[in-house]
Length: 359
Image (cartoon, rainbow, N blue to C red):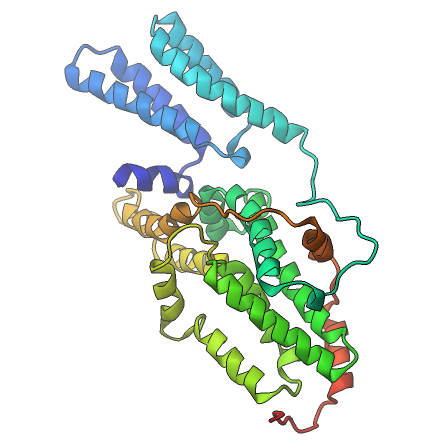
């Protein structure tokens, strides 16, 4: 468990390049000594170095890091340690190919737009199928998130070092604004109500298939101020209260945490709470102890926050892509900005007018 926690969190106190330099140096110094304890330390250093190289993510890779590894591999070959050199070389080639792809990477959309003669409307599509397709898009992005990205974000909020996490959170925000736009774009009050009811049905299916990410994106849309202030049927307002209870922030999101603890993969968690917990741990605990040593208790807490995320990344959903629905989503690119939403909301219900629930 200590090893897992170290591999997961070391980037919070040392860079991958620095760690590789230290481990290769430690191996070189100890392997030259005939003492059994030193020889054991050298082997352990090499084993950890290989594990670190294996777990390197795309943002970790640089030309300098690859050159250092190549030189160390050449050092192993020169010393006659061919088995070890071969083991490291296999991992090095894997990472060099990823680095090469990174250099020539072009931004790709999540999916192609479906070419349909008459695009469907939200009400034309089945709620369960919409939930499944939302989940496939979420899962595609979620699986690409590297755990180090999440830990680094809690410290630095650096988009460049957390590219997959950034895309995932942007997707969440776009989906939420898209859902708000779908509702507010309806001119008739009954049509707006039908769309709200439709999103509630979709959320019900998202909850069943453990997609808390899209669930929360839609809930944040329905509970947003421009929509919440409008007049809705009592069954809608009461139903939303029940859905909001899952993510109630009182008692530190106890209901949601309990639900997550009882959930088996596949599951897509709400990433916002993971980032919030990691940020609290980072701010509330020093990086170093009074004697200058690394505060590993802090990293132990960080590890236990992300361990569920690692568990959920092992699962996969059995759904098949439906290009008609994917095309309807259009990557959630079409949505109104905040000012436009407020303008529509105030046109429907001017400020100062009394809010009443429709019975």
